[in-house]
Length: 92
Image (spheres, rainbow, N blue to C red):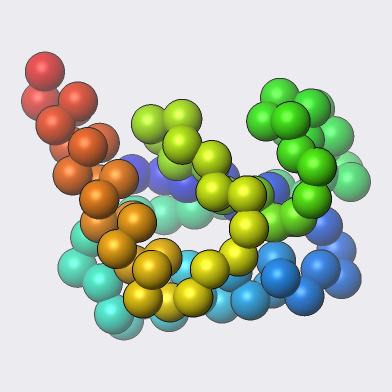
């Protein structure tokens, strides 16, 4: 499962969310996922596509969009839930 992290340079909340994703990806979570960081200043078409009004913005394959940074535990639960949905759709 691949996520998109839309961010801006010098955005503290973006860095915090990226750090939490790194922690989950490499140590704390069994759910396999990857993510790509997209600088919306370089690629504004992504900001427009997802109607981004503030950073960060995390986009899941299901179409769900998280429009703010959250802590490690809620983020882990959300990724696990989205992964289950992702796998179920993949099996259809």
